[in-house]
Amino acid sequence: MDARTTGRFVALKRKTLGITQEQLAGELGITGKAVSKWETGRCLPDSSIMEPLCERLGVTLSELLNGHDIESDRESALSEEVVRQALNTVEQLQREKRVLVGVLIIMLGFVTLTVGQSVADPSTSETMDFLGGFLVGMSIVEMLVGIFVTIRNLVNPS
Image (cartoon, rainbow, N blue to C red):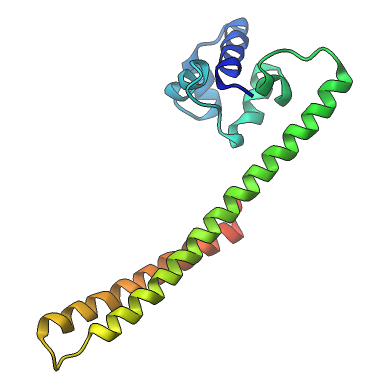
């Protein structure tokens, strides 16, 4: 899978259909700059956009990623299934990463809470008491953000 080869293939198929980068982008709900980046080989389409892109260009996922038409139906079906499984695995890993980030934010909130409680002591100075209170407040925000991120990615995997 080479971004430049895939990009040239996207450009070829798009031009064969007689549509502009902007038209293709509009149909896929993305920017024309994104299509330009694909066609110049600077990046590959996002996994969430690959299937709609393939449908619009009239190609299979395997053909898109290989950057050429696949002749054999059997070869096409096998490689299509492998590519779909790989994309599903990548999406699952991305989801798990987002959940892990949420959990790490919650843990950071607990650490900040602990530091804030140890610093907050009105008997030392007003500045330290203020700093401690500020850190306790920040810890609450961090934990709420972490809970939101974690739950959002557990409930809505897309």
